[in-house]
Image (cartoon, rainbow, N blue to C red; front, top):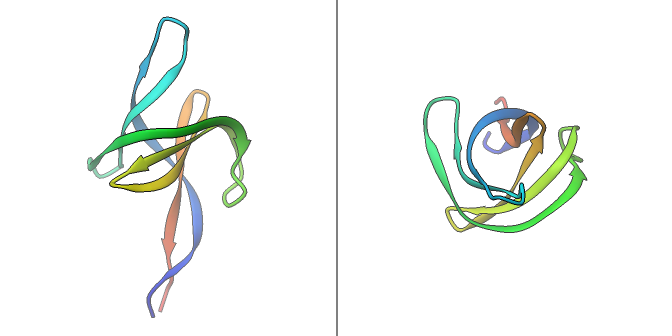
Length: 88
């Protein structure tokens, strides 16, 4: 059986830029196994909670590999709503 069973909060390393006004722009997400995913563009930024995994903070809607996804800054850490594979 294929698919996802749900989502889990996964803390990740994020490479970001902070400008003189203190605005943070994520540039890349580094997965725990070392894979790096460059952020193509930040589409939105707002204070919000993760309805799928819990937690709250600054929610960035980013485009990675041409697909939109959420990236959360829950100071001082970043997390994503990682897919959990369904068990056959």
